[in-house]
Length: 362
Image (cartoon, rainbow, N blue to C red; front, side):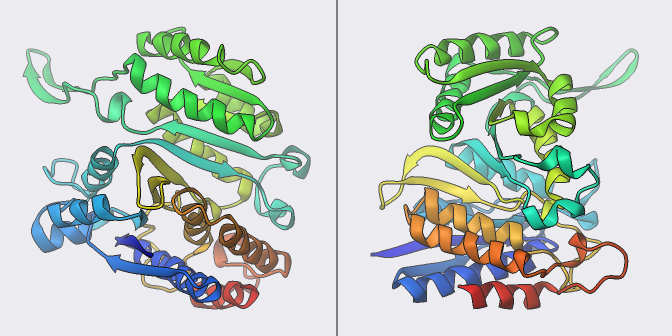
């Protein structure tokens, strides 16, 4: 059976790190005898330059027919006009909506040999192993009405935060299922003391929790969660939250591992592929990093670990996924670092060099 993987390099360093992840998948295919068909399509700024659309119909159609999607990053100064009607991020949001990807999983586990790469004290980082489950297709990013209009007090901008019972229930179900295979704890993050959407969120999560008596539910306001994520991160297991709060908290969590370049993510939906698994989109959590794009120094580890999540969740290839993760682990244990992980002028490896090391461990 040929597995069809759509690759969307996007913009900036997205093209560089996606190329590295693709190479890893090719090596895995050869090592285990898997037939991976990798095809590239445009999204984001690159798609705008080509066709004037951030998510071309051809790209969405290819993704809908695929077994999984591997994404790089979108955006950059070239397309950063706040008044522009077409923006690269529209491609990403459209893809999430089009594929029905309602849950974003972001594992955060500091590597033992990289604790000094974080500005936090080492004792705060010990035993940290958390998973952020972020609702991905609801909330303020997709709510309507959205836009601008003129009032007697000047121009008004409106964004609507909206959640339904069904949207909250399905992502909460996934979070509790995942917690059952971990440390049996879910921390649900909201702003229930202020927002009506958060009060519905807390209500529905509590109802879902009743079906998982073995899992402890902890409710926490987002401002407290932001503080505790830095002051006592090891207290979290599965951290369940809304679209906007999850976007912010997961970027904050990158400080625990020393660099955004190390963190992968998986976005999952309700549809299944030809393997009977969830079709998903996999991407590093970092952006397009235009300041280093084209220099060949980007950290590809987040993209490579995202490819490992692709193997696990969308293809059911656990042994292959672990092989990739073990190769990254061995690479870091041996002292290999990209420039974002070394202080000052210490020696670092470029993108191609660290990819070569990771492949050698495979």
